Structure formats: structure tokens, C-alpha cells
Amino acid sequence: MLGAAGRMGGLIIQNIVKNGNLQLVSAFDLTKIGADAGEVAQAGNLGVPISDINDLGTILNDTKTDVLIDFTIADATAANAPIAASCGVNLVIGTTGLNPEQQEIVKGSITENNISAVIAPNYAVGVNVFFRIIREAAKYLADNDIEIIEVHHNQKQDAPSGTALKAAEVIAEELNKTEFVYGRHGKAPRGDEIGIHAVRGGDIAGDHTVLFAGDGERIEIKHQAHTRQAFAAGAVKAAEWISSKEPGIYSIEDILGFD
Image 1: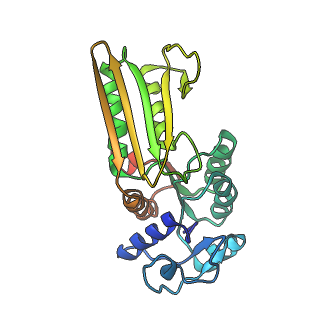
Image 2: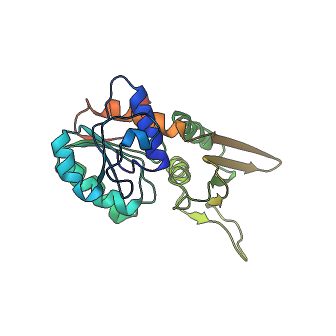
């Protein structure tokens, strides 16, 4: 587990402990090095110390880690994914905000080292059903104005969210739209774009709304995450699933068995 001392890392560790098919064998962070990862996560003593991220390759090899879960930040993922891949460790990556160069580094390391990985902006099952619903709606509402509004807690690093960008990509692919507008300011006449808006405040786990606005009516399709548990449970499910798959890069849709 990368980011083991963080809120998301701790919640994922709690879910690993509850899963009878998985065992935490290594944990990494920049803080609380040497502390028991289970105790930090309030999951009980697991006998697994939090290791310095600079020792990533050595610890992964020594512990014979099968799958590394990474919900950190873009710069960290771009640096650490190639190290894990070179150790033959499969990956579950939920980090968002990677730029095209960082995405290429991560995906290239997966391919070059012949490992398996799940990469997704959101591991909640409901969000991935949400993606399918908005794709279907877009088929029939192509002439509507389309806006995406996402709301997250005030500590979120990237904007717009990876989930909002994925929603925009799903719709753009279905309707062959090519223009995204991120927020609006000043004179901003609407064209044929998909609007994407980010709101930050409080401790909101994650809300995403897609608005299809037509003449005299509108449809809003929304997913709300009440807590981070939805993401943690999905990540653990992905880790269990990827361990037996052939090398390659997979999505949540693959795990859920979507056509």
C-alpha cells in the first residue's frame, strides 16, 4: 500500500484486513515510518511497518508483494509505478491528475515489464454504472447543452476531478465532440462544447452531475459518494481481481464484466 499513513490508505488497509483472500505485506509513506501500518490505519497490529518510499524496490522484492495499490499524487505515481513494475509487481492505480507525459511513463512501464494493472479515476462501482448511463443518455440527447459539475473536499489536489474528465471523455466519444470548456468567466457565449466545472469545499467525498439541458426541459444524472468507503472497497476488489490476470492494462469495466 502506497500512502499508507493517509486517510485513503488507512481505509484501504482496513478493507484489506476484512478480506480473507488478501494480506497486507508492505506499506509505504513519507511519514510515520517504522510505525505499524495496521495501528496507523486503526485496523489492529499487523506486524507490517510503514517503510520509507525510498526503499520501495528493496521492500517489494523482500516481501514478495504481488499487488501494489497506489492512491497518492501524480508526481509520486509517475516515479513509483516504474519501480514497482520493474519488480514484477502488479498495480492498482487510483491516482488522478497525471499529465500526458506521466501517463505515458506509467503505461510504458507496465507494458515493458509485462505486468498487469488496473488504472481508473474512480473505483466506486456506482460511478462506473454512472458512466454507462450517461453514455446511453448522450445517444438520445445529442442536441442538448451538456455540462458536468463536480464537487469535492477542500484538500483535493487536482481540478477538475479524474471522474469528471472521464465523464466528459465518455460523452465526447459517443457524440464526437472535441471541445471542452473548463469553467467560464467574462464573455463566454456557449458553443458546441462540453462544460466542466469544479467546486471545492468542506469534506465532500465526491459528487458528479451531468446536465443535459434542452429547450423547455433538462435531465440531470448524478452520482454522490457519501464516504471514501466506496472507493476503498473497489480498490481492494481490483487488487484481488488483477492478481490472476494476464499482463495488460485493465479498467473497472473489465472487473465488472461490462460488454
